[in-house]
Image 1 (cartoon, one colour):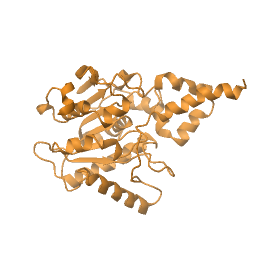
Image 2 (cartoon, rainbow, N blue to C red):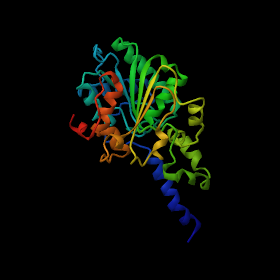
Image 3 (tube, rainbow, N blue to C red):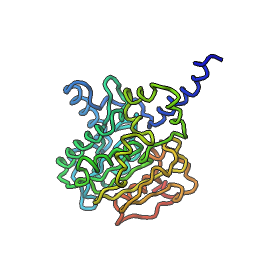
Length: 304
Protein backbone atom coordinates (compact mmCIF):
# COMPACT_ATOMS: atom_id res chain seq x y z
CA UNK A 1 0.00 0.00 0.00
CA UNK A 2 1.27 3.46 -0.88
CA UNK A 3 2.18 5.72 2.08
CA UNK A 4 -0.48 8.26 1.22
CA UNK A 5 -3.13 5.56 1.27
CA UNK A 6 -2.04 4.41 4.69
CA UNK A 7 -2.35 7.99 5.94
CA UNK A 8 -5.74 8.61 4.35
CA UNK A 9 -7.78 6.70 6.93
CA UNK A 10 -6.40 8.42 10.04
CA UNK A 11 -6.47 11.82 8.34
CA UNK A 12 -10.10 11.35 7.39
CA UNK A 13 -10.87 10.35 10.97
CA UNK A 14 -9.13 13.45 12.25
CA UNK A 15 -11.07 15.77 9.99
CA UNK A 16 -14.35 14.08 10.85
CA UNK A 17 -13.47 14.42 14.51
CA UNK A 18 -12.88 18.13 14.08
CA UNK A 19 -16.21 18.48 12.30
CA UNK A 20 -17.94 16.65 15.14
CA UNK A 21 -17.30 19.57 17.46
CA UNK A 22 -20.38 20.98 15.78
CA UNK A 23 -23.98 21.17 16.75
CA UNK A 24 -25.48 20.55 13.31
CA UNK A 25 -27.57 23.37 11.90
CA UNK A 26 -30.29 23.13 9.31
CA UNK A 27 -30.75 25.81 6.71
CA UNK A 28 -30.98 29.02 8.68
CA UNK A 29 -31.22 32.64 7.61
CA UNK A 30 -27.79 34.29 7.08
CA UNK A 31 -27.96 36.21 10.31
CA UNK A 32 -24.38 36.82 11.32
CA UNK A 33 -21.96 39.56 10.44
CA UNK A 34 -20.45 39.51 6.97
CA UNK A 35 -17.78 41.59 5.30
CA UNK A 36 -19.83 44.73 4.85
CA UNK A 37 -21.63 46.81 7.44
CA UNK A 38 -24.75 46.94 5.28
CA UNK A 39 -24.94 43.17 5.02
CA UNK A 40 -24.36 42.83 8.75
CA UNK A 41 -27.29 45.13 9.52
CA UNK A 42 -29.63 43.32 7.13
CA UNK A 43 -28.61 39.91 8.43
CA UNK A 44 -29.09 40.90 12.06
CA UNK A 45 -32.54 42.25 11.25
CA UNK A 46 -33.44 38.94 9.59
CA UNK A 47 -32.32 36.96 12.63
CA UNK A 48 -34.23 39.17 15.04
CA UNK A 49 -37.41 38.98 12.96
CA UNK A 50 -37.23 35.20 12.67
CA UNK A 51 -36.59 34.61 16.36
CA UNK A 52 -39.01 37.29 17.49
CA UNK A 53 -41.80 35.56 15.56
CA UNK A 54 -41.16 32.55 17.80
CA UNK A 55 -41.26 34.66 20.96
CA UNK A 56 -37.60 35.39 21.59
CA UNK A 57 -35.25 38.19 20.54
CA UNK A 58 -38.12 40.55 21.30
CA UNK A 59 -36.33 43.73 22.30
CA UNK A 60 -39.54 45.20 23.68
CA UNK A 61 -39.64 42.46 26.32
CA UNK A 62 -39.30 43.74 29.88
CA UNK A 63 -38.23 41.28 32.57
CA UNK A 64 -40.84 40.49 35.21
CA UNK A 65 -40.48 40.60 38.96
CA UNK A 66 -40.45 36.81 38.97
CA UNK A 67 -37.72 36.65 36.31
CA UNK A 68 -35.84 39.94 36.56
CA UNK A 69 -32.86 38.96 34.39
CA UNK A 70 -33.00 38.42 30.61
CA UNK A 71 -31.54 35.14 29.36
CA UNK A 72 -28.87 35.19 26.66
CA UNK A 73 -28.51 31.95 24.68
CA UNK A 74 -25.10 31.17 23.14
CA UNK A 75 -25.01 28.52 20.40
CA UNK A 76 -22.32 25.93 19.72
CA UNK A 77 -19.76 25.42 16.97
CA UNK A 78 -21.23 25.26 13.43
CA UNK A 79 -24.66 26.20 14.84
CA UNK A 80 -26.56 29.48 14.81
CA UNK A 81 -28.79 31.68 16.93
CA UNK A 82 -32.02 30.11 15.68
CA UNK A 83 -31.61 26.40 15.06
CA UNK A 84 -29.68 25.66 18.25
CA UNK A 85 -32.55 27.09 20.31
CA UNK A 86 -35.76 25.95 18.62
CA UNK A 87 -36.43 23.80 21.68
CA UNK A 88 -35.08 25.71 24.67
CA UNK A 89 -35.94 29.29 23.68
CA UNK A 90 -39.72 28.75 23.43
CA UNK A 91 -39.55 26.60 26.57
CA UNK A 92 -38.14 29.58 28.49
CA UNK A 93 -40.39 32.17 26.84
CA UNK A 94 -43.45 30.12 27.80
CA UNK A 95 -42.24 30.30 31.41
CA UNK A 96 -42.07 34.08 31.41
CA UNK A 97 -38.43 34.80 30.57
CA UNK A 98 -37.15 37.47 28.18
CA UNK A 99 -34.88 35.45 25.90
CA UNK A 100 -32.25 36.61 23.42
CA UNK A 101 -29.76 34.83 21.19
CA UNK A 102 -26.87 35.90 19.00
CA UNK A 103 -24.74 34.68 16.13
CA UNK A 104 -20.99 34.88 16.66
CA UNK A 105 -17.73 33.68 15.18
CA UNK A 106 -18.53 33.81 11.48
CA UNK A 107 -15.59 33.41 9.11
CA UNK A 108 -15.43 35.42 5.87
CA UNK A 109 -16.99 33.54 3.00
CA UNK A 110 -18.57 30.88 5.22
CA UNK A 111 -22.36 31.29 5.29
CA UNK A 112 -24.82 29.62 7.68
CA UNK A 113 -22.17 28.10 9.97
CA UNK A 114 -21.02 30.10 12.98
CA UNK A 115 -18.80 29.69 16.01
CA UNK A 116 -15.70 29.11 13.85
CA UNK A 117 -13.70 32.27 14.50
CA UNK A 118 -11.15 32.82 17.29
CA UNK A 119 -12.96 32.28 20.57
CA UNK A 120 -11.54 35.38 22.25
CA UNK A 121 -12.98 37.48 19.40
CA UNK A 122 -16.31 35.69 19.74
CA UNK A 123 -16.33 36.59 23.43
CA UNK A 124 -16.05 40.23 22.39
CA UNK A 125 -19.15 39.80 20.23
CA UNK A 126 -20.97 38.31 23.21
CA UNK A 127 -19.95 41.32 25.30
CA UNK A 128 -21.51 43.70 22.76
CA UNK A 129 -24.67 41.61 22.62
CA UNK A 130 -25.05 41.58 26.41
CA UNK A 131 -24.71 45.36 26.47
CA UNK A 132 -27.43 45.63 23.83
CA UNK A 133 -29.77 43.36 25.81
CA UNK A 134 -29.18 45.26 29.05
CA UNK A 135 -29.81 48.59 27.34
CA UNK A 136 -33.06 47.35 25.76
CA UNK A 137 -34.48 45.64 28.84
CA UNK A 138 -33.26 48.00 31.55
CA UNK A 139 -31.87 45.07 33.52
CA UNK A 140 -28.55 45.30 35.33
CA UNK A 141 -27.52 41.67 34.81
CA UNK A 142 -28.22 38.78 32.46
CA UNK A 143 -28.10 35.03 32.83
CA UNK A 144 -26.24 33.14 30.09
CA UNK A 145 -27.11 29.64 28.85
CA UNK A 146 -24.71 28.12 26.35
CA UNK A 147 -24.41 24.82 24.50
CA UNK A 148 -21.05 23.20 23.72
CA UNK A 149 -18.60 25.99 22.77
CA UNK A 150 -21.36 28.37 23.82
CA UNK A 151 -21.11 27.11 27.38
CA UNK A 152 -17.36 27.60 27.52
CA UNK A 153 -16.74 30.76 25.47
CA UNK A 154 -18.64 33.05 27.90
CA UNK A 155 -16.05 32.21 30.56
CA UNK A 156 -13.53 34.26 28.56
CA UNK A 157 -16.00 37.16 28.63
CA UNK A 158 -16.44 36.77 32.38
CA UNK A 159 -12.74 36.48 33.14
CA UNK A 160 -11.09 38.91 30.74
CA UNK A 161 -13.72 41.30 29.32
CA UNK A 162 -15.52 42.53 32.44
CA UNK A 163 -18.50 40.23 32.05
CA UNK A 164 -18.60 39.20 35.69
CA UNK A 165 -20.13 42.57 36.57
CA UNK A 166 -23.00 42.00 34.12
CA UNK A 167 -23.72 38.28 34.50
CA UNK A 168 -25.49 36.60 37.40
CA UNK A 169 -25.22 32.99 36.24
CA UNK A 170 -23.59 30.92 33.51
CA UNK A 171 -25.27 27.63 32.64
CA UNK A 172 -23.27 25.40 30.34
CA UNK A 173 -24.95 22.50 28.54
CA UNK A 174 -22.29 20.00 27.44
CA UNK A 175 -19.59 22.72 27.52
CA UNK A 176 -16.00 21.92 26.56
CA UNK A 177 -14.60 23.76 29.56
CA UNK A 178 -11.30 21.92 29.49
CA UNK A 179 -11.27 21.06 25.81
CA UNK A 180 -11.84 17.71 24.19
CA UNK A 181 -9.69 14.79 23.18
CA UNK A 182 -12.33 13.72 20.66
CA UNK A 183 -11.90 10.17 21.92
CA UNK A 184 -8.16 10.55 21.51
CA UNK A 185 -8.27 11.39 17.80
CA UNK A 186 -6.61 14.74 18.33
CA UNK A 187 -3.48 12.78 19.24
CA UNK A 188 -3.13 12.15 15.52
CA UNK A 189 -2.25 15.82 14.92
CA UNK A 190 1.53 15.36 15.35
CA UNK A 191 1.52 12.73 12.60
CA UNK A 192 0.20 15.16 9.99
CA UNK A 193 2.50 18.19 9.77
CA UNK A 194 0.56 21.26 8.74
CA UNK A 195 -2.89 19.98 9.68
CA UNK A 196 -2.81 21.74 13.04
CA UNK A 197 -1.79 24.97 11.30
CA UNK A 198 -4.62 24.48 8.80
CA UNK A 199 -7.16 24.08 11.59
CA UNK A 200 -5.83 27.18 13.33
CA UNK A 201 -5.85 29.24 10.12
CA UNK A 202 -9.14 28.07 8.60
CA UNK A 203 -11.21 27.25 11.69
CA UNK A 204 -9.47 28.76 14.71
CA UNK A 205 -12.34 27.91 17.07
CA UNK A 206 -11.72 24.20 16.49
CA UNK A 207 -8.04 24.56 17.35
CA UNK A 208 -8.95 26.61 20.44
CA UNK A 209 -11.17 23.78 21.70
CA UNK A 210 -8.57 21.01 21.55
CA UNK A 211 -7.52 20.00 25.05
CA UNK A 212 -4.24 21.70 25.96
CA UNK A 213 -4.62 24.57 23.48
CA UNK A 214 -3.08 27.94 24.32
CA UNK A 215 -6.56 29.44 24.55
CA UNK A 216 -7.79 26.89 27.10
CA UNK A 217 -4.57 27.01 29.08
CA UNK A 218 -4.99 30.77 29.54
CA UNK A 219 -8.70 30.45 30.26
CA UNK A 220 -8.21 27.92 33.06
CA UNK A 221 -5.10 29.38 34.66
CA UNK A 222 -5.74 30.53 38.20
CA UNK A 223 -9.02 28.64 38.55
CA UNK A 224 -12.14 27.86 36.56
CA UNK A 225 -14.40 30.53 37.99
CA UNK A 226 -14.55 34.22 38.86
CA UNK A 227 -16.20 35.71 41.95
CA UNK A 228 -19.77 36.89 41.79
CA UNK A 229 -21.06 34.45 39.17
CA UNK A 230 -23.01 31.23 39.75
CA UNK A 231 -21.99 28.34 37.50
CA UNK A 232 -23.96 25.27 36.47
CA UNK A 233 -22.72 22.53 34.14
CA UNK A 234 -25.20 20.00 32.74
CA UNK A 235 -23.47 17.00 31.13
CA UNK A 236 -24.41 13.60 29.72
CA UNK A 237 -22.32 10.47 30.11
CA UNK A 238 -23.13 9.67 26.46
CA UNK A 239 -21.38 12.76 25.10
CA UNK A 240 -19.35 11.65 22.10
CA UNK A 241 -17.90 15.06 21.29
CA UNK A 242 -16.61 16.58 24.53
CA UNK A 243 -14.65 13.67 25.92
CA UNK A 244 -14.14 12.59 28.57
CA UNK A 245 -17.48 13.99 29.70
CA UNK A 246 -16.18 14.83 33.19
CA UNK A 247 -13.80 17.34 31.62
CA UNK A 248 -16.87 19.54 31.22
CA UNK A 249 -17.20 20.00 34.98
CA UNK A 250 -15.87 23.08 36.75
CA UNK A 251 -14.16 23.48 40.10
CA UNK A 252 -14.59 26.41 42.44
CA UNK A 253 -17.09 28.22 44.62
CA UNK A 254 -20.65 28.72 43.37
CA UNK A 255 -20.38 25.71 41.04
CA UNK A 256 -22.97 22.98 40.55
CA UNK A 257 -22.02 20.10 38.26
CA UNK A 258 -24.96 17.97 37.09
CA UNK A 259 -24.86 14.62 35.30
CA UNK A 260 -28.09 14.11 33.38
CA UNK A 261 -28.22 10.39 34.16
CA UNK A 262 -28.13 11.12 37.90
CA UNK A 263 -31.47 12.87 37.36
CA UNK A 264 -32.93 10.33 34.95
CA UNK A 265 -30.94 7.09 34.50
CA UNK A 266 -32.73 6.17 31.26
CA UNK A 267 -31.96 9.47 29.51
CA UNK A 268 -29.79 8.57 26.50
CA UNK A 269 -29.17 12.07 25.16
CA UNK A 270 -25.77 12.67 23.59
CA UNK A 271 -23.96 15.92 22.83
CA UNK A 272 -26.47 17.40 20.38
CA UNK A 273 -29.72 16.20 21.93
CA UNK A 274 -28.96 17.46 25.44
CA UNK A 275 -28.85 21.04 24.19
CA UNK A 276 -31.53 20.97 21.53
CA UNK A 277 -34.42 18.68 22.48
CA UNK A 278 -33.94 17.24 25.98
CA UNK A 279 -36.69 18.61 28.22
CA UNK A 280 -35.13 16.98 31.27
CA UNK A 281 -32.06 19.13 30.67
CA UNK A 282 -34.33 22.10 29.97
CA UNK A 283 -36.02 21.65 33.35
CA UNK A 284 -32.63 21.67 35.04
CA UNK A 285 -31.79 24.89 33.16
CA UNK A 286 -34.84 26.57 34.69
CA UNK A 287 -33.79 25.33 38.13
CA UNK A 288 -30.38 26.92 37.61
CA UNK A 289 -31.96 30.17 36.41
CA UNK A 290 -34.25 30.37 39.44
CA UNK A 291 -32.86 28.20 42.25
CA UNK A 292 -35.26 29.69 44.80
CA UNK A 293 -38.17 28.11 42.90
CA UNK A 294 -36.38 24.94 41.80
CA UNK A 295 -38.32 21.69 41.70
CA UNK A 296 -36.84 18.19 41.48
CA UNK A 297 -35.72 17.13 38.02
CA UNK A 298 -36.71 13.54 37.21
CA UNK A 299 -37.58 11.45 34.17
CA UNK A 300 -41.09 12.86 34.49
CA UNK A 301 -39.76 16.33 33.73
CA UNK A 302 -39.95 15.41 30.06
CA UNK A 303 -43.66 16.22 30.21
CA UNK A 304 -43.31 19.25 32.47
